[in-house]
Length: 346
Image 1 (cartoon, rainbow, N blue to C red):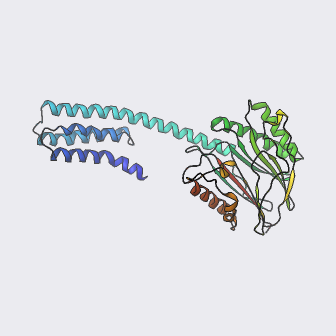
Image 2: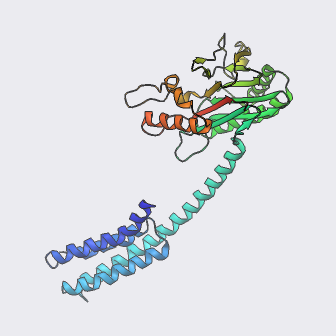
Image 3: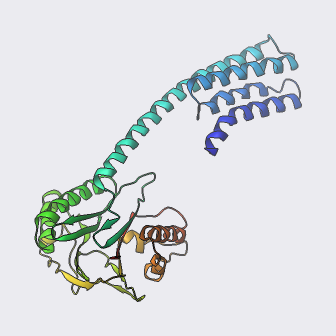
């Protein structure tokens, strides 16, 4: 809002400065032609009518200045007026084109927001005895979706979730994320075993991906006092015990990302970690742990998890995200997604 106010007042400030300089300078210096800056600046933020009005004011200001310089009715004054009219006409055209472009961008933003709601649906805040929090930060300017993906679904076999990261950026990454999420939403309900859900994702991606594109992902299924994990080359989640301990939920063997298993890489094996009352588990993408500050230091996620030990999981995750942005000191270089589960039966 402040920038808009400045832009709206800029044409009048410029014309006032031109008039003042012209009055203080020697007559005949020819500063009047700079009044054309008024309508030129008006086109930056104003409508066509506003730009025309500023042009009219510029002509009105030029007349007493011409009288002061004793050039009223002479060629110099005529050239000034014609210049103001010409620049005003060009500025009005520019203002119209800008307004049309702004409407088109607004429509594109509405479509993008609708796509976000379909692709990355809000996660439930509660699911059984779980409290859930989500944070997503896109690296693209003014964008809300990117190559990171997440989903939480409640199935007859319990709560299942997915957190992943598509190789690459841009629309191709968003399209791949849509394939993965669509396949997961179906398989999570249909398949009895978590490994079968992973196979469905791999089969779906093998039909769509080409070359060496891949998706790192971790799948999870919540059980009584435990959580099953299936890791496809993704950063291992962090388990925050109720006793204050922090440990990585690492698989016994490394596995290839989704999309590369067709090359003969070993399939990941499901493994379980303890997840009892009061415990938390943090899923995240590499955009979090690979974020650097001005000195090139990575974000120390494990050392900052104490931020998460507050009552409200979403407030805790928001604080962690703010700490991440403060560490970087600017926009993130990569998408960053974080999903926090807290077991809280009461």
